[in-house]
Length: 389
Image (cartoon, rainbow, N blue to C red; front, side, top):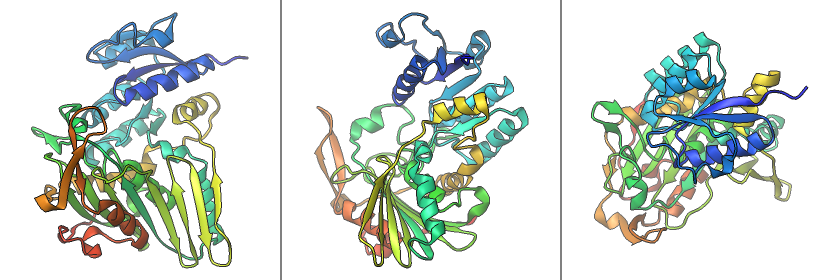
């Protein structure tokens, strides 16, 4: 028998939500899902919905009412960070399954409320760390288990992206730590390059909140924003493994982020957006492989249809949420001195971007040596802030 397509409501269909809209269309064409409704402050136009010719979805600004009227069985939440928890709990109260964009919440307390609500309702909840769907993740973890690079010494992540001033004008919450009394935590570690942090923890197989013993943060900003745009963090796990990430949105050149698994007899580099793995070890030549990927919405649909295991249930992002909490409660990011950065033309047609001098090499060294910025001799780096969960 042909399964009935899974009726879905998408909350947040513009910005990053356009990717979800395109993916829904792909899976709708395969008969796996059906776009039942869209929740947006401004309804999508006929032109925006043209790919869904035929039965158009219902639209409303009221997420709960839309779930009720459409009979949706699942929802995708791709809205501002500070709205995630309440929308997710509204879905859970109705027995509606979830694909929730990262970060799942702005505070650890909200994440705990969300997790409790999901558990009590019995719904399936998938957190939107797409890199966890890469088939490279279990392949790398198997290499580590086999001892391909010897004893595990640590995990390092590096992310060097270019974002211009328009990036921080795209929404009122962009680049903010809070809006009034509401936490947002839209920093480089917690949102745009959150995958670098979460993927490093996942490769370490230490993604639960209880795996974290200590977190050290060094938060900086070149842009005139509240949140951090150039930062490093080191998570020390309960068994003493260091997991370090060095990231920036003020790169000299845009580059694909990656995670390095360090062993005492070699290393594994994983470019998680490319699903590409490079194994380098003693006594062997370099070995490169490219892996497939399972889409998270497709995995959620399969979970509901056949019981396939979810790839990113909330508990696997608990350690990442400890990092979000450490960033949230840390002192405000330190503005970089004027001589540490310069401006350049924006990536678009107008505007400018801020470029931190030498940051591309600094980020790479952080991942390579498992070091924080202050340990690399960077002149603008101050001593680290330490958080013990």
